[in-house]
Structures are given as structure tokens and as C-alpha cells.
Amino acid sequence: MGPMELKVLTGKTPVLDIGAMEKIKSGQVDIVPGIKRFSRSHVELVDGQILDLDAVVLATGYRSNVPSWLQENDLFSKNGFPKSPFPNAWKGKSGFYAAGFTRKGLAGASADAISIAEDIGNVWREETKRRKMRTRVGHRRCISVA
Image (cartoon, rainbow, N blue to C red):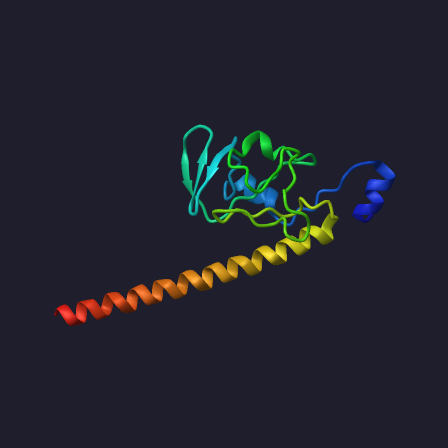
């Protein structure tokens, strides 16, 4: 039975799991109580912990409760949805992205995900270029001093 048929016949919303539950059970993915603040490379939790993370997945359920836990509110309005309309609702500040909040179903979430992936690629390329430039400048200084 497909996911749409399951929803229509039983009223149950299907869960499409491609390994997330196993990663949670094994401890590879942690569930945390709440996020107070995002920065470029860290997340501060409501209990004061500061975590250095590669990724944060916000699994907030069917009703957006983002305003109840996200203090920095440049991206989201009080109703829990992005302030900017689709297709520009996916990017916030400090490397914060939101996918699937556009009320456009899987197509909207997919469009958001593509935009996010492209932006992350652009940021990575720019940061890599800057690092290479600093390294080259640093080597020139060492050579001229020696």
C-alpha cells in the first residue's frame, strides 16, 4: 500500500524512514530538548550546552512550533511559517535553513532542499577559496621573513 492510499484508507499519516530511526536508536543522532540560539558553527541549547554540530534536523511535527523555541526570529513569523513566501522561504541568517515550511507538500520541500544544497555548496566553495588565499598569504609571509 502506498503512502497516499494508507492516509486515505486508515487516516494514518505514513512515516517514510530511510534509516533515521536506526541512527537515533544507535546514538548516531541525538534528540535534544530545545534550541536557544544558532551561530555559524555552534548551537546553544536551552539548558546552556553549546554543541559544535555538522547538521541540525528540526523535526517539529505537523504544526509548526518554531516560534516557541527559536529565539532569533528573522526567518519565521509568529504563525510558525517563514516570513518570505515560496520559493524564497528557505534561507535565514547564520547558516540557518528551513525546508518544508512552504505548504507546498513534497514538491515544495524538494525545491527548498535543492536551494539549500546549492547554497551550502556555494558557501563551502567561498570558504575554501578564502582558506586557500589565507594559506598562500601566510606562506608568503613565512618565506619573506625567513
